[in-house]
Length: 242
Image 1 (cartoon, rainbow, N blue to C red):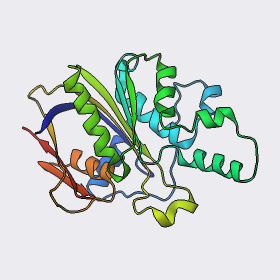
Image 2: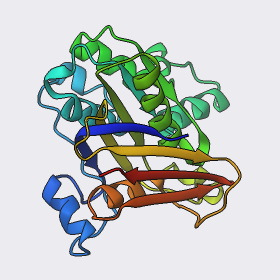
Image 3: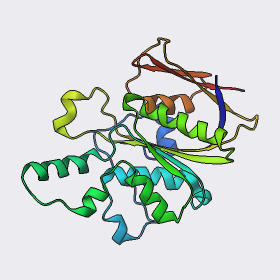
Image 4: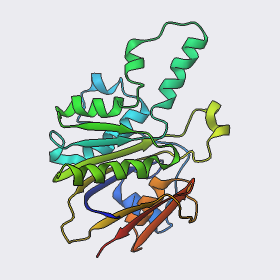
């Protein structure tokens, strides 16, 4: 079974790719990912609050705020991340190992739904929100959750935000995909104009994917009719319907 949907706004942020033009140049092979991640300015957030935000939170909130636009105060949301704010969490674990006191604020900002909660606070959004973690398939798992909620709850639109940053050095030997990327999608009901469909097959096999979010952005910026990714015998297929 395939679920249909439309994307009215797509925003992404990655090292060296910060604007729509940057992403277009990346798709054409004229620009590449860099080593260093520049952080969004987030001018709409007061400076005192902005200073408390980690790089992970800044990228996630930038994508959320830019993609939601004037709907940000009422749109239901799904946030997804494989690792969450792992740099902040690692710092807390190191404090425990060194018998140091933990900061309640740092702990509160380290939990998996922290970015979603910050978005809700900054925008006054009281609509339902959820935070997803699905291993290497976290991007597609979050997209599936968003589109399923759109259909099941008969929503006119839903905001989907995916964010992951390169993991701390101590975890790199255990992680194959270490990409830094944030993606924000304002997803709406299919309307017959540039619609998409999402399908999932738990048994099929296809080419493996290192970073589903980057694959998705490449698909969005191309003329390809279909994106198919496979991780752990989970095959995800996004297709253009017209």
